[in-house]
Image (cartoon, rainbow, N blue to C red; front, side):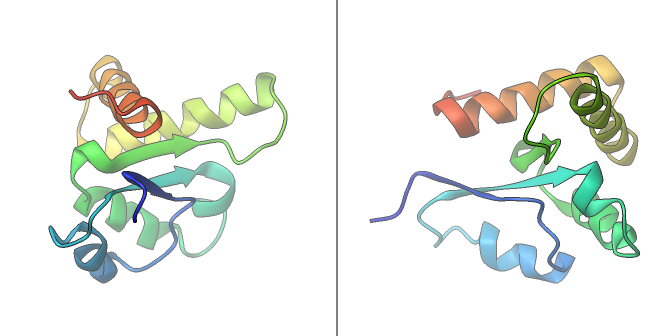
Length: 112
């Protein structure tokens, strides 16, 4: 049996692979998370931008990729949220709502 939801942590695959993960035959909802440290600190950042642009809006998650809380983590999360909002053409408040809804759906199984 498959878990109901899967997160591809700091997804760094090509945009072309999204089809296989999002295919209706996949028996789980696949989410894709992105972090400032992993996805946007290398030359592969443009690939991550393209993936974020192509993903269905309800499958995008953000992360800090840090193992400690505090101002640095908060700052990295804010940068990531602002970046996703810019790439998707969302206002900041709207984007925060959307990303929060995605997290609740992924983590808690809540429906929109």
